[in-house]
Image 1 (cartoon, rainbow, N blue to C red):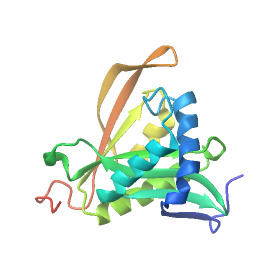
Image 2 (cartoon, rainbow, N blue to C red):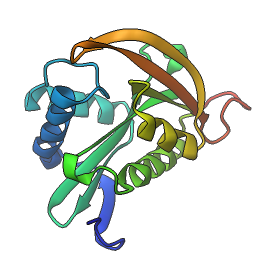
Image 3 (cartoon, rainbow, N blue to C red):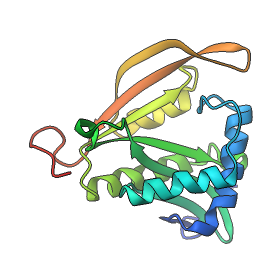
Length: 180
């Protein structure tokens, strides 16, 4: 059963959220195709990634109810070269029992707002697996448009997997030069 609207909280990540985040991501790596990682990273590696995102001014959010962390989302660098500095890639992961309850939508909406406020201009959704229609529909419902598919670029769980690329402007988008 979904949490009551007033019970769900979306807030910036805190360092003590990393154990729960690591567990959620571990499950996604081992059982899903959203990530193309094969081996789940350690909590120490997740802490290194967390530190890098925060140092770069990238938004990182969690969804909680009571003391339970249900999911997380962050906007990380799309690519490392300087010309891409105003473009971010979104990542959203939910605990297995939290999927299908509208939490991904609430996290992505909040992430779009936070990335816009931070001055980013484009958000890219790189959706692992063209069969992941729920993620594709979620992105489309929040203004992302399909821009391409890399076909059969990942091998995981005994099959070839596509990457679906979707994009949406943030703030002024491409109508003016970036401030970042």
